[in-house]
Amino acid sequence: MVLSSKWYFNVSRETAIGCIMNGLSLGLEALHHGVLLWRVIFSLGLLTQPTRCGSVVSMNAMDSSDQFQFLTHAMGLQ
Image (tube, rainbow, N blue to C red):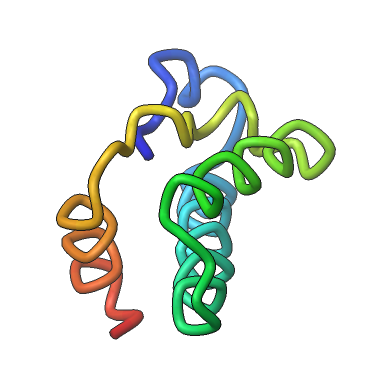
């Protein structure tokens, strides 16, 4: 998950942080319920457009559990 290169033109900082935190929270919960990481990433990617986070984050940029763990720790979710 990375910020889109255009995010700062489209949304506020608070919206960007909200998109990231919500995605990580949902993903973390899914992982705790045994959903495989690739399915979590794919599913969160599907949710970005209807939630208007598609212009803010790219879920396809995250390709390992280490990256996911790093982000959850960095955002204070774990």
